[in-house]
Image 1 (cartoon, rainbow, N blue to C red):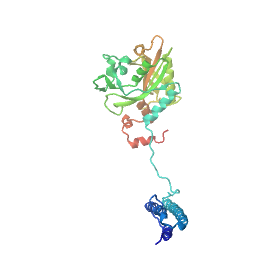
Image 2: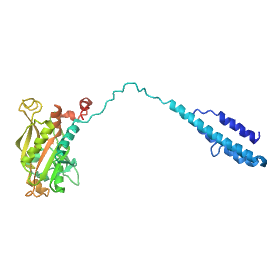
Image 3: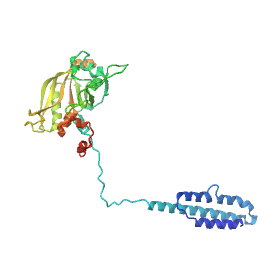
Image 4: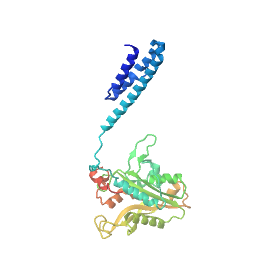
Length: 344
């Protein structure tokens, strides 16, 4: 077979080629139009062609190359069309599947609502470490090593050789001490976060819980400012008709100190199991920042005064959603959490 007959046979084979897979298509490319393919080999054989037919040979081989490239593209397009036709198109007329959506945790919902309420009146949100040292958690807050107030809180201490007085913070007030030490008044902050106390877990207590602490320090801050701030919070959280009452109490870092009750919004102050038939529900502790705390943090107590308050998020959530067991917030029971799916 002469070389011209070989060109013609190759043209027929190229046009007759049938491809069903991507591998077969790649083998076709390598065989005919690859850098070491048969058409490249033909070009090298031009030296064997008589001079008077070299031009004819060149034209035939170039035409063969173009034919092979065109056939390759045609086979490729055909293969892609077949692949696309095999893609399963869903029936858009079918009803949607009943997918279970996640929900926000009730503690997160209540915490964010509290943060938003205080943000409206100028409070800035800050955070502090959950692993704290004794100075910020106790001493800076007017609770020295021999102070009986330490007995009020059962503390988880952490053994560290370089600092044996490390602990899990018992309140977010520790972050307030850090802020007072690093910032100059006026200071208006809230500190939401998780705290820890070595308590027996029950329906009303847990070894971990969440607080929102508030602190306002400036010139001429009074107890009246504290009361008005807390009244605003109560009405935003529990309704415009809410009333509050302040009862004398004791906290080592505030003087005077008070417990605050809000009128029971469950029974409209008529008396129920939640308010123990008193018409009032205790929701937070508060007071004026003790001058000793200001001085310990480098703030002039002769020039500045301030107030602080601490709200338990779990207690607020229990009242808001009428939950009677605090442990439900920590058990991750889907049956409980899915009830808050529609809550925004």
